[in-house]
Amino acid sequence: MTTTYAVLSEGLEKRFGPVHALRGLDLAVPEGTVCGVLGPNGAGKTTAVRLLTTLLAPDGGTAHVAGHDVSRAPHAVRRHIGVTGQDSSVDTELTGRENLRLFARLHRLSARAGAARADELLAHFELADAADRPVSTWSGGMRRRLDLAASLVTSPRVLFLDEPTTGLDPKSRRRIWEAVRELASQGTTVLLTTQYLEETDQLADDIVLIDHGRAAVTGTPAELKAAIGSYAEVVTQDPAALAAAAVVLGGLTGGEPALDHERLSVGAAVSRPGLTLPRLVREMDAAGVPVSDAGLRAPTLDEVFLKLTGNTAAASVAPDGADTGGADTDGAHSEDAGHAEDAARTKATKTGKAAKTRKTRKTGKDTERRAA
Image 1 (cartoon, one colour):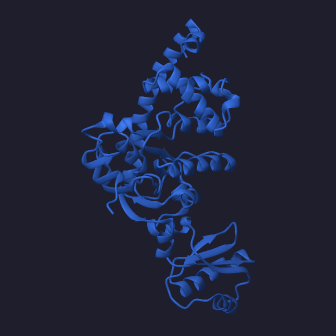
Image 2 (tube, rainbow, N blue to C red):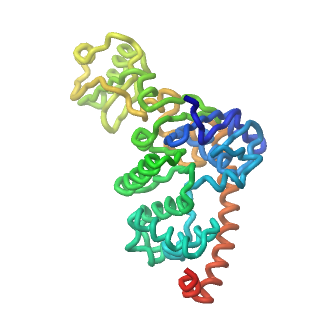
């Protein structure tokens, strides 16, 4: 059976002056699946999304989205995609209902069809009760759901979500997850970039780990976990014993121990056969390490991420523009360059939107309501 790909890129390249952001990125996302794109800050994730959504032109390679070439047929690509970026796209001076009607008109829906679609989305995302209040009065989770609703006004074939749940509380995050699962079950292809590895584990059919502008590793969550084997962890009773526990664990597992001083724990991927839990406890006891807990288990995606990229946990969650320890200087600068372009684009858009809003409010909102 031939696989049809909703997103397909080969050798995708992008430079920002001397900075090489993407260095031959290959992606293949089958239709109707959720693809999680992971990587340390500066790896090129957001740059890749910008190219695939036609916001930037590639310097090399090819990319097709929904069957259309992003360079030769960008307008056709845009007709088939929805995008929820890191920054909110909604106007906080307008109400939720007005925002969705505005997006519907930008997509050339009639006033009647746009009003109906806005009402449908507001109900679906449990926003109907607040629909006629200015978005400035909404919570962060509600605004993010409105952002997602705005990207679904035209029922896109491919949905790009660039870190959609950053900054949300657990309850709001899970609401977004439920919405993504439902979209995927209905046949929408979702490409998701995120810093929350649990999110990828929950949602993704496949994972692409981007590092230094390339797809370093691909596979299902289970395949990536299996690739590094089991994981051993010891919790000590004495902070002074952490170093000794790390030495013992490193010798037993053959892996690089990771210390968590807050939890008083040491963990490592097991690359040597034959390690059992009783042996682990005996060796710790022989080394004089007081153990309060010990275990052998399957690795988490966080541990897979750190093992496969070789980056520290701090690098994986560092804010944009922060020092990533030299993990990918080019990529970090590329993200900064991309954010600068976005800032200019956003400022121009907001200026035009604000002018339009002022004009609309001056003539009265009733005009739009009568038209609908």
